[in-house]
Image (cartoon, rainbow, N blue to C red; front, side, top):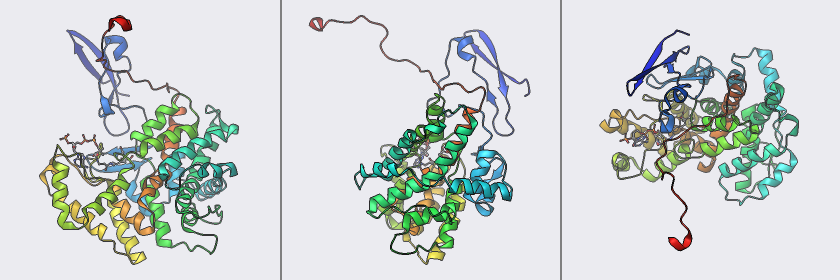
Length: 428
Ligand code: SDX
């Protein structure tokens, strides 16, 4: 690490703070001793200028629109890899050999069943419960089921918990869909791929064989790859913060699901398709673009903009290509895609969006694909959570195994009343 320093002068006194360099991307100013030395906190609501940890999982260059998982570009992984292989890569740091991949897939496959008692948890929900409410509840409930792996300081316990979470999310998500539509749950089929198994549990029925459409299986698997991990986003930071107290891993992932649900984050895919349907025909796009630019109108273009990307989200590029592939394979042509294409075209040529560097993000096109495959919009964020579980789990493992890991506990700028004495009721 170079001995570069940053200097801070406050009221005539100067302090040095070391600058740490990563393998690529911005350096960081190590301010861990700032409060002890200066009695001052930094102030960074939303953490726009704050690195919360060291990580070797995912690198994003927002200005260039670059996304790497363990150094591999997302476009290459989406083109040549599989969700299981990317999951192995995120968890272990290297692409697997054929044997390693076989063993990993085999292990995950054999954890896809849920404890029979968990089926009863679904019965407690209304049929119209949002699938993300069910995902939160059922994944949190998993923390009551695995007493054989609660010692998170034991790498073996962390490994089995990680595998259980990755394996069971498709089953939990598929069951949330089945419960909503009133069809019976289907058990996993170990002869199928991870993604094929998910499609069958979701759209298959006991009354007949379910035929997996190869183009749909490939597109779904690619969508899972595109959602697998994304540096220290809000839900990943939630999982890390929950995990920093030593909490149960299943409970930590449930916290991540809760955070992802918000429309500013993973909930944007559902909100985006609803927005595109509300816009309806392309002639109504200018009106909505004006609304998005109006400071007095809370309306925003869902699926547009990003805290880190100030260029095109590379995942959106792959997603747009995948829309065309799925539409061609299924022989569909949802006009909502045309509306999305024209909305993108108009927004990217508008000075407001150009000046604020607002581009389509991962959520802008995903809904058109998921809708064509047959998912209701309410399931979109549940699919995001299914895929992001491997990222959450990999980031959680990285945090727990970091020897310098401490409980996360931010401070504040206090602006409330200073100390005052209690006033008895009769004197108020
Ligand atoms: C995800 O962090 C991640 O990595 C997340 C994610 C992941 O994989 O984990 O990539 C997944 O969450 C993608 C983002 C999905 N959300 C949406 O599509 C919702 C719509 N987008 C916005 O709400 C917004 O762009 C955010 C929340 C994504 C980012 O917000 P920031 O970084 O806090 O930026 P901002 O809100 O301060 O916006 C900067 C400016 C503002 O104008 P000014 O106050 O400077 O005048 O741009 C404007 C905003 O008003 N703006 C938009 C806009 N997004 C930002 N104006 C209109 N439409 C939009 N979509």
